[in-house]
Image (cartoon, rainbow, N blue to C red; front, side, top):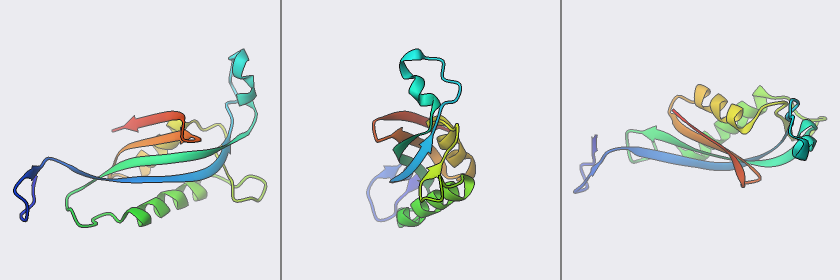
Length: 126
């Protein structure tokens, strides 16, 4: 537990939350559901990425804008660009896969959500 000296209460745990979007394409090559066979082909989403990162201090131990930029740079370097554009090509990666990659490469992350167009996706927790 962290005791904040200037406050009259005890905080059990502090997280900073990041929330940003990246434009990317992906596909589900092995889709065997007739109603959504279009998922076998590359399609674009605005992926909303959210995550909670544990910190020990209340004063910007992790700076949110900088952390978001680090994660975005990580994804841009991990995956190729689509047709020389600014769009990231996630290949056959699912929302779950992207969330796991972030958790594996950012040790202070406690959970990560990756949503397709801000609607549905995955949340992966440590």
